[in-house]
Image (cartoon, rainbow, N blue to C red; front, top):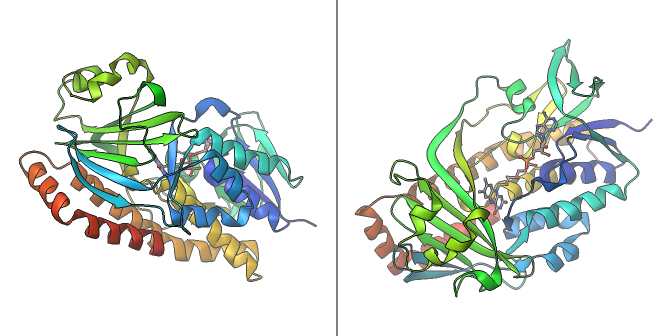
Length: 371
Ligand SMILES: Cc1cc2nc3c(=O)[nH]c(=O)nc-3n(C[C@H](O)[C@H](O)[C@H](O)COP(=O)(O)OP(=O)(O)OC[C@H]3O[C@@H](n4cnc5c(N)ncnc54)[C@H](O)[C@@H]3O)c2cc1C
């Protein structure tokens, strides 16, 4: 009989895991609310994340929808003066950006063509565990169980709380505005095929093109204490370049940045966490989804060696827990550097303009190799 796996969550981690399990002959049920319209903005996928997707056979589809990003241009936020350029893509290791919805559609279509994967439009309301027998109560009135359950329901999901009820997630004091703008409407310089990172006092801005460079994705992170008004209009109104985004302010979505405890355990009963449910991290290194793909690539790697799914998942936890925690720490550290306030921020910018290229390139190469 084909072994059954239940996956909670139908976003990047959930779909990627479903494809991997079905490829190795497991029958998969993905449980999640069927809400296709929730994906805002884009994702950068670094070489490590792309490599972790390569076994799916959708690389060309991803590259067709993605923009290859050649460099990060680092600029001073207040003046838009260039500090340094960091190369990103090499010939064999592309670094790309893609609209979240496009990546979701590619993964979903791959799932829909596999008869071993089925979807349940439902939300998990509660999880119980008796005698190591784990049961999921769903909002459609059903109780579901399976020997292997994957918690891919994100940083705020039920499975993370089930495995570690006391784990903290508190506001970091920073918030993020995200917005997508038609490339033809953004100020000159933004739609160029590069990532832009503008470093300010207690704030930073990231932008990059998506949708074949037809649109530009903006992410503005700021300290809630340093900016009295949290309105994006008020923050950008006197800026020499960003004030020109003003006509499109209805496009911005505000989200607080959370700070998470690292979990020392990703398993309880039949459930194992994966992706953001296991290792949520601040977005400053654009590694969250890439790390999720690496979790699944690790499972696939172990299945390829002939291990059972249960053992492959066990090995994934052992390998990926320290790796992903290290990336989460580096993301936090990067955020601390991005958010330095005046007058140290000016010194930071001077150091970056003098020595930034080598130091940051080495840091990123190291991250993509070992992450
Ligand atoms: C501003 C910002 C920018 C980012 N930029 C990047 C980037 O450039 N590159 C990158 O790699 N990462 C980036 N990330 C991180 C990335 O978004 C996450 O790492 C990624 O979305 C995690 O995917 P996931 O599938 O693990 O979880 P999620 O995307 O959170 O998905 C969780 C899933 O679980 C489902 N779910 C939740 N609760 C239940 C329930 N009770 N029952 C059933 N289903 C449930 C949801 O419907 C959803 O399908 C960024 C994050 C932020 C905030």
